[in-house]
Amino acid sequence: MGALPAAMVPASGVGRAPAFGGRLLDEAYRVQFLGRAMIAFIRPVWQAIAIAMVLVALRQGMGIRRARLRESGVPRPPARRRHVAVGLASLALLAIGEVIGAATMHWARHEPVFRTWHAWIGTAAVGLFALGGWYGLRLKSSMTGRPPREEAAFRGLHVFCVGVALFLALVEVVVGLPLLP
Image (cartoon, rainbow, N blue to C red; front, side, top):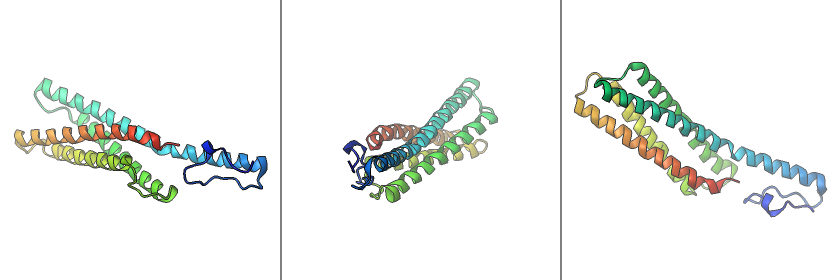
């Protein structure tokens, strides 16, 4: 009677009720484990919000592209400002989520930070998002003074890096599902 069912015990073995505990203590440990399980879902929800923001920035970027091609000119500055703001906010959320994930692995689970493919793919995705953001900011600052060929190169690198990063982020989601409690 003193131990939780095997399905309720985390992999680390923490969460076993002492043998003298009885029913009340078993219930307390069950609630404690469920509380930890709920905490385990905070970071995935955080990252899902960040990826949703990336998709909003993608939609805004596609609108900027359509306006540039249709009007054969530069899109309106408010659209670019919104795209940059949402892109930088989503990059910040993704980076903070990456740090939270590493901290959770190290301090909460007491496991090596890069033990899983999820961590490696996530790090590559955040790095590519950051590189794509850097190219995007270079593109934004070059709107007035660079030759069109250089501007097209920055635009292509921005799109490539962010596109690959978004694909890796979606792969990371799939690879991370088995890690949930």
